[in-house]
Image 1: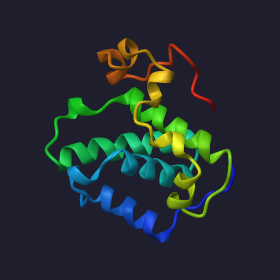
Image 2: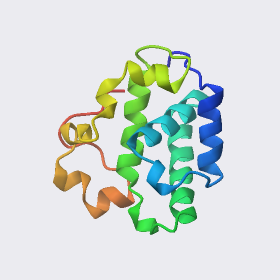
Image 3: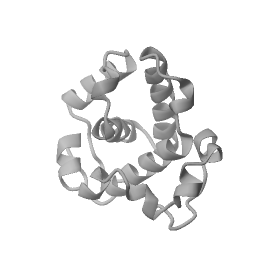
Image 4: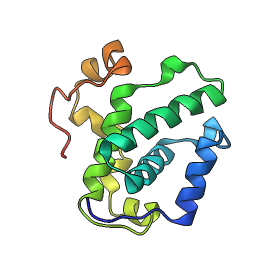
Length: 138
């Protein structure tokens, strides 16, 4: 992976999420991408996926959201997608990264890799399922 870095603002965001200080209403798709970016700046793909899983589960608990809302396949697939774009160019911050990674802003892009039946299955929610339409570039 090219050397991207997390800005002080990105690191502060990570700390806020991990401390449970980000309200559910503010934790949108872009926030998920930002957290994945920070974790990928700090370690490899497997480490980032592990940190993301832990952070999201803690976030759900802190906000009184049922644990069943967590989706393992979407979590891992989005971290993989962020990693793919990070491999294309280095960035000094998430804001610089996302400015050059516009396809990640499309919340429906995973449906180019997964059929709806596969992606929204209970199996995919509980454990990672490989794409059934097109591999996520690595």
